[in-house]
Length: 414
Image (cartoon, rainbow, N blue to C red; front, side):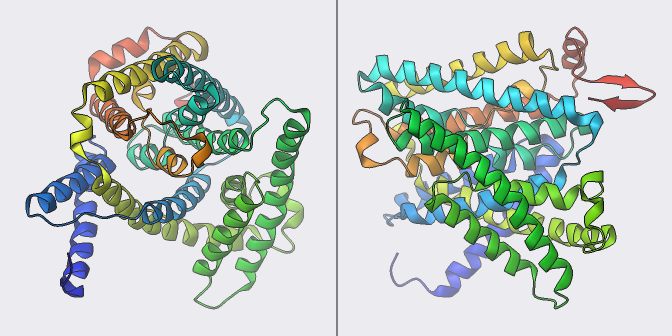
């Protein structure tokens, strides 16, 4: 693709953003996830370039870079969207245990399947199973804006917890010596340290935001958050907690524990910061998500998906993931099955973690087409659930299942 004018690339980028915006509008009308349309657009462009004998070379670092920035912005946006209250404690608890248990069972089942199918070391299979077990908040959160508040908050919490748990466990496993007492203590110690640092650093950043009066301040904060995330990763801390907790503190400054800090940062000042941050994160996450999933689509080789072994292995993995989610939601959580059951897409975190697998843990017999198959299939499953949401026959099914929420006085309560 040498010799192409820079203006062509600029026009292509602008057209991609315009199409992404139209995809979002189309998604609201149809329930088809906009990110799935972006992936399919990337695949289509790749096939078009191949047809015209043009090279398609996407450095892995490019996808990883967009993914990391996108993850930070999306998790921050999720934190800014969540309001904490006593009435929501049960909802948060259900979302947390849902994320933990479904993730643990999924990782165990997927690693066992890969172990028996590929006949390789179990620890390597576990390293591959962990990314496949993470539900993508980057795909779910933009796709549930039309949901009722309780379902929306449950999925926001559950997918955000899934992201954090997946990243933390992945880093722990690739560190080696899983059952060594010192490593276990170090792991839980890093979580505790990250929680303390998250609160302290969040308050410092928030104080800066309320004191800086110049127009250029919010991208300075983004730079600081990205710096903290990268530094935390290098120190093997669950740095994503810093991002999530910062968003939660900004959006929940009204709770009693923060009232003693009002003399330094008033509720009005923090509320103004929250409104502006929310607008900026929404715009930025849209932009990053657009380029990330389009570029990921460019990396997908459809010929890999035509392999019988890819279809068989990928199909079994998806079936396991779906069955585990169904069993937990139906028989243990006692929640609405629809549409939560279908919202199990694999995406940004799965891709990022796959790119981060150290050479020593690589599976020699693993076909990358399996990854593409799982991501595309779970996205299609989510699309089915999103399109079906609100249909009378599915509401009737919900009525036969115990409620996660009880309607009292016209209000839904966790």
